[in-house]
Amino acid sequence: MSGDRLVVTTPREGVALVTMDRPGKLNAMDPAFFAELTALGARLGDGDGIRAAVLTGAGRAFSAGGDIDSFHDLDGDPARARAHLKRVYDAFCAVERCSVPVVAAVNGIAHGGGTELTLACDVALAGQSATFAFREPTVGLMPGWGVVRGPEVMGRHWTRLLALTGRVIDAGTAERAGLVQQVVADDELLGAALDLAGEMAALPAPAVQVAKAFVNRDAVGGFAESVEATALLFGTPEHRDAVAAFRAAHGR
Image 1 (cartoon, rainbow, N blue to C red):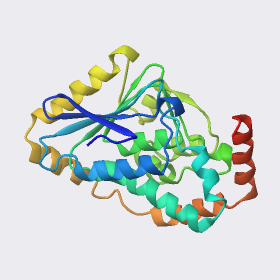
Image 2: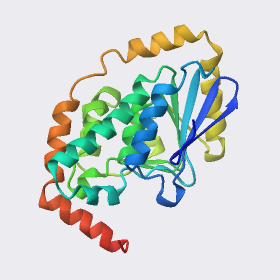
Image 3: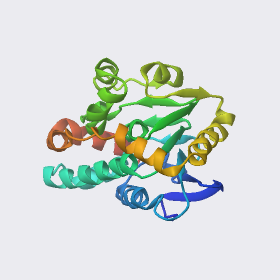
Image 4: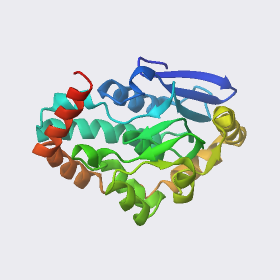
């Protein structure tokens, strides 16, 4: 099940470890990543003996969010932006709708799409050094998935604080906000996440799967409007200027 962006192993019986594997780019999310995550979410638990999964990042980041270079390729065209956003939302929805529970093991940087992907997981654990942020406003965008899911997970006030400022928060603050359910030492993070997934995998699979589906039964709606609003922001001069400045600063 492994691909160019996601490496899948089975370190424990019934538990898949899914590792985002672009450490050189802080596991930034590009179209290939979204395609792999969508396909993987549909396959996990489908006759493969997997009953729970852990999602983490290689290197010093969970994910720094969307790959800015892929934003440049959109060229400010709302139609292209809509297609891109559909790929993004399909991938995050695939995690929510995956038949098995997905535990986020958030290591290091989880900004932009990294925080949004955390929202899509069923439970989130974070290492002490993890940081979270909706960085989209710093490049003239809004966190399209985050403004829909954030209020359900963190409440409106925390979602507004992050979405309207781009502020970076630490793991302890994320736990208080409800984004993360447990903070552990960095060197204990993966073991703790695998232990939790193992607890889930040891239970009767139908009970766990139905409970996940039932909790997520109302997790629909709002995305069509979010796609339209965010696609329009991709076409603003403020966004184009911010992307150009980022690429120039990084020699691209």
